[in-house]
Amino acid sequence: MPVHVETLTTASPQDRLDLAKIYADAPDWLLSPHADAEQLIATGLESGTLIAGRFNDRLLGAALLARNDDCWRLSHLCVRRITRGRGVGRRLLDEARRQAEAAGKPLHLAAPADQLESQALAARTQLPLDTL
Image (cartoon, rainbow, N blue to C red; front, side):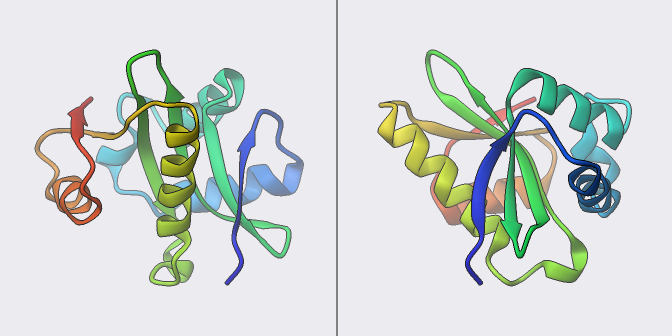
C-alpha cells in the first residue's frame, strides 16, 4: 500500500471529512489537550504540524509533528479503524523519523504518561516517550 505522507496546512472539504473520520476512531485520551477532534485538526492545520498519510486521494491516518529546536515530537497518531494493520501508522512514523533525521533532530513520541499503548509503541519503535 503506497502511502504518501504530507504536511497539511490547508485541507479540502474531502480532506476535512477524512480527518474527521480518522479522529472519530480515536480514544478520548488521544485528543487531549484539545477539546475534540475538530479543535485538534484546526490547531494542526493552523500551526503546520498536521501530517497525514494519503492513499488513492484519501487520508487514512494523521498525527501532529512538532518541529522543536531540541527535538521533534510526534503525537496524536491515529489511523482509521478500517485501515489499521496495513502499515499506515508505520509509514507516518517512519516518514516523521526520516524528516527529523534529515533536519539533524531526534524524534520523540509524545503522549500521556499513563497510556500503555503509547508506552508499547515507544518500546517497539525504540523512540523516547515524552509526556504531554
